[in-house]
Length: 267
Ligand SMILES: Nc1ncnc2c1ncn2[C@@H]1O[C@H](COP(=O)(O)OP(=O)(O)OP(=O)(O)O)[C@@H](O)[C@H]1O
Image (cartoon, rainbow, N blue to C red):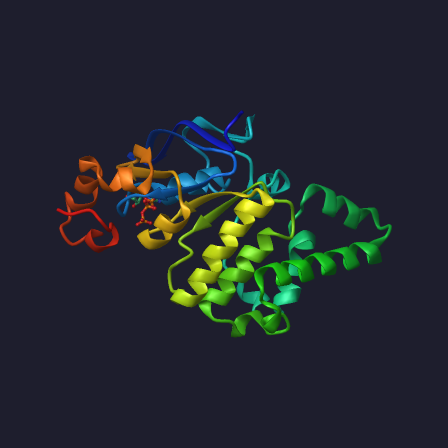
């Protein structure tokens, strides 16, 4: 079975600087795969290439066995690869429900967009979108804020809505970028439960960049460690914590760097 995402020998240069260096990794179907590494390891650059925001200098990327190298985010969206995005400023004056309903119309998923333009059955289409948004609200248990303006939500509630936006279309794989940052523990727990449920009940695959090791430990298996633009190792969090090279990568150059964010690792 083809992996959901396969990155093959991908390199990205910025001028003379190599941010991602001949990097290969795979994200298996049905997994919640974590991506960790010290600052500057190349995680965001790699994510940007998988998500279509940045082109590789060389190498190839595959989604479910089909090459996607160089495709744009909206093309990947149509194929079921989604990345969560902060709610744009102009959407902060729309309600939670309205924010969810904007997704199919505002970003061209193949089938939904066709239906929109065919002009027929527009009202049914709108009703379908509303019903789907209501299902998402129920699933995420955010009914109490569904008519609240998105701009009034807490950081964690916004993250739930961002996750909800991926549920408005049939996602195969969702890229999550540092979802724990600025989210209180209660809401982080809600977010993590919903990610687990989407994975278990809806078959979502997740690829997750995260600095919060508690969250990585709860959600991710396997975890991929990047350092200096390449994959250093892949394994369970326990295996990674026990690996000397990983400890060195985190502690090596910078004694204060991420020392506190790699639990179980001792210098
Ligand atoms: N547009 C760019 N132009 C030049 N250099 C860049 C650019 N984007 C990233 N880099 C460099 O590439 C390297 C990798 O950066 P990247 O953001 O991918 O790392 P990261 O692992 O995501 O780090 P962090 O955990 O701090 O977000 C860094 O040295 C960074 O300065």
